[in-house]
Image 1: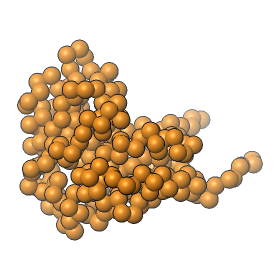
Image 2: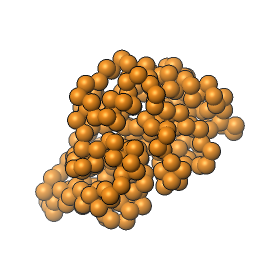
Image 3: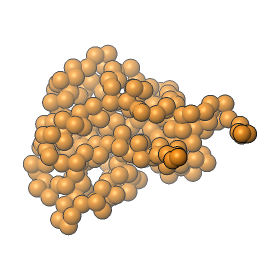
Length: 237
């Protein structure tokens, strides 16, 4: 058998552009490598703090993300994603900049999820920062206008710990913030048929949200598992 080379790293098809953060990344978090059942390759985008990306519109960071995406591709990845849903702002620019598929944000699932639901039902979004998730973020991800949005903003732990880049995280308090925000979203929107988690740090609480609301929960984990399965199709005997 002969095999072909051409890149320095093999086996990690998915490259993840990481924010420059130091808050705890527990299992389930996109930035915790144990979350994934397949290898991934990380690249930290320096100066891309959670506050700068989420609260300040990722101002001045596009070139940094493009450069890091090029590095991931040069290292050998076959597709690129990011660890912040707010980077939907850069979907078009990043996809145009590299010659591999790019999936910046879990929000890109919303329109597809809508097509899965029965008539009269629609997907809603749960975000870490409802006050800074703009119509442009949603438009760039292909989210239909009028999509319901709920947020953990104003909760006791989750939003503050992540966006303020805290050294410690009260996991149970963060879990309750996510459950309460999801219940509030569902309570205000009786036509809700599913929830899409904008924030990649919400994945550890997806099962709790599903239990609390009874609704299917889509996340960056569901998105990247689907993405990776196209980059590395399963082989059969």
